[in-house]
Length: 121
Image 1 (cartoon, rainbow, N blue to C red):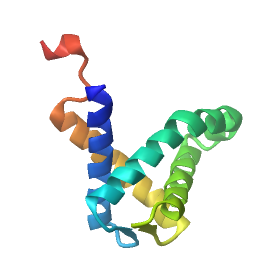
Image 2 (tube, one colour; image 1 turned 90 degrees about the vertical axis):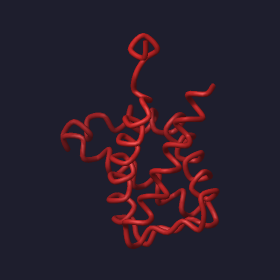
Image 3 (cartoon, rainbow, N blue to C red; image 1 turned 180 degrees about the vertical axis):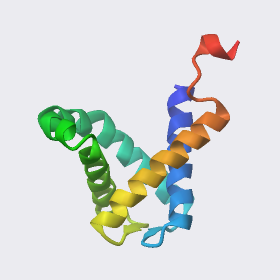
Image 4 (cartoon, rainbow, N blue to C red; image 1 turned 90 degrees about the horizontal axis):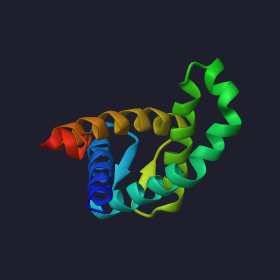
């Protein structure tokens, strides 16, 4: 349970940091970033596997670039659902999703989220 909360906090931090660097992505406060991270987590857990299953041939043909489009669409949809979070355009959302992924990876790496319990000892 603690691991899930840490992932949520890392994702929210990455979203907030991305909004500071990317013109066209705005987050009013950290609570809005937490809401975006929650909605994105739900999308990634429930909807994303279904979409990836049906689009797998196109993902392979595009060498994985379609995944960036799918993640951008999720981020753009989150901006329509969550008050206090705005994305200027669909392409800004696609670029922002890549930057959020990079920041999430870096923050997770810094706090050791990728390590298993055996590696920590």
